[in-house]
Image (cartoon, rainbow, N blue to C red; front, side, top):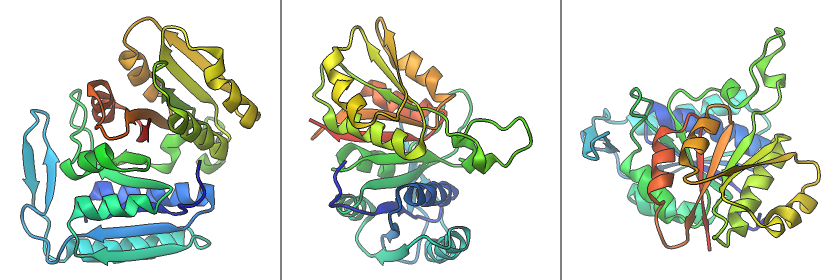
Length: 280
């Protein structure tokens, strides 16, 4: 991973999902010992139609956000996170620039950009906001999409002995890998993310993966336990199943292109946060 862009940045829009995303981003910043940047984009006051989501039929729905809610939410998030993480360097910023261009610009300066998605709506999965999906499709840096209701204990092994959940080991990081892709940025992000958590890395790929693909990364991260899962055919169902027992699902997209159909399906249906990583 590069070290010239050194913040974890999260978009705040006043929704519950963005506040839960901010909580996830704060934990990620603490794990990586990086500053946390909270960003609210767009003009005040917020009005009906200020937040958009895509429903299960693919239509864009407007969600009413009361005037001033985003401004108050940004201030409240900064205060609450500073109490929860007193050693964390937190920067809260507002910009009148519309959300998508503002977040894309912020991503250039970030190690990771974190955005919220609405909570699940049943077996159909959960809608992904048009802003979140648009940014994930175009950002130059990894974008993590966090659903509403995500809790700190959701990324750790369930506690059975009464010990504090925060002391439990992290669940695996799951990487969906296309053997035909030149994906060093994708693989590097997955290994680095597993390493900062001291979590195992599970690599799911179709057909046979050349041993040379992961060998240099295994050498670079000797403390990371790596398990490969070969799938004959579409790896999507296996990745979706693995997401139910993962702390983070990592998928790639070709630079200059949006996520493919399989990645979009995983973004919508996965049971854990999803990192979308651009690669060559």
